[in-house]
Image (cartoon, rainbow, N blue to C red; front, side, top):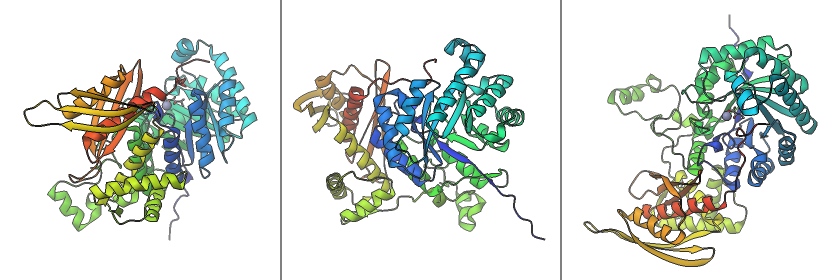
Length: 520
Ligand code: KIV
Ligand code: ZN
């Protein structure tokens, strides 16, 4: 007698890389970068993309709007505090969306209500209901979150969740805002909420776990086993402090352990690695080599015993296939003789579209220059080339003109940097402890930014000594942290580009309101 498998419930994948991910210090992204990532997420068939917090600044508003215009196959969401002005702004930004969602939230833990909001529990419930009602008058799809639910009292959570559903919220999100939960306990919280809230059948229960104890994915999966049907997560686990649950780990756990989980996602997993690379490339947050699914070593087998086993039968040591998550190790994609159409087609597959033929032509010229220096061009090279050239194109304040470095054994390196400052060419010269130090000092001689260098890292984009070096420079000034990226086959030039891109970011990024920094 054949047994039919239990039908699986859909698990909604809600990606918040562009909102919570961007709240990582230094991970801020431009509008163009956000649209590029959103297009990749759409391709991956992410159900909901949280594109930002529209109220944070004019730039954030424009970014949510641009994502809502560009993406049609995923729901686009904007975060908003439980405030009329935030909700109105979110609705305005989401107007072009085919499917728009307002995600409104208020803190529900005793510590947040007393010290941050300075409101009584009754006032918090009232504010939540008012916010959900207001949002429902503007869009059909409303999500309500109980910030710091992980440290909230169960009775109060039941009360506010019931009221929010009554007011029209269709998704109820239970965040472990400070990453305090333990899997069994968090799963139990979700089970009890679903059991005890009388109208729980009228909403999808969602979880949003932070990784302060390294348990974000485990807590999210425990919640799914107890009935949660939406998981909020980010690419590479990017997010506030220790980050959020990693999308790639949630999706692959669900796919690989169908025997344990009664859910399935719509995700096209082959886009996971290219998207991870794009996010890393745009934010300058490198992926650790041993990171599950997307780390360089995730599918590498070093020991002879493992290699032997893999060759005899892959499943001896592998529970997933590298190709299923989009690893195409160093597949040569383009070369010196590739034409413009091949270049355009490959970039489109990587989620990169050009606004005009002129922009395509400029990128193609740079590609040809790169192909002259490096005859095998990989996807990673193309992504770095586009990120680098777009950052340079948007750099309206500082621009690199030339770098000249003299470095010899036993002698102090000296650098001369010519750059343009608001259209005027200036030049500086400095010695340094190494060529990069000399270049940074020569730049600072001209700009006197007063910024502190918080991080300098170089990463070889591909293998081989002709690889492009991808440099990240993190600068801090007055508490504001920005990243600059630069790529070149010459790492000294890549470093100069990264430093100048970081200076431009410091110059241009306006003040923003942090969604969780203020009470209502
Ligand atoms: O961590 C958190 O509580 C959040 C909410 C705003 C959903 O990011
Ligand atoms: Zn969060």
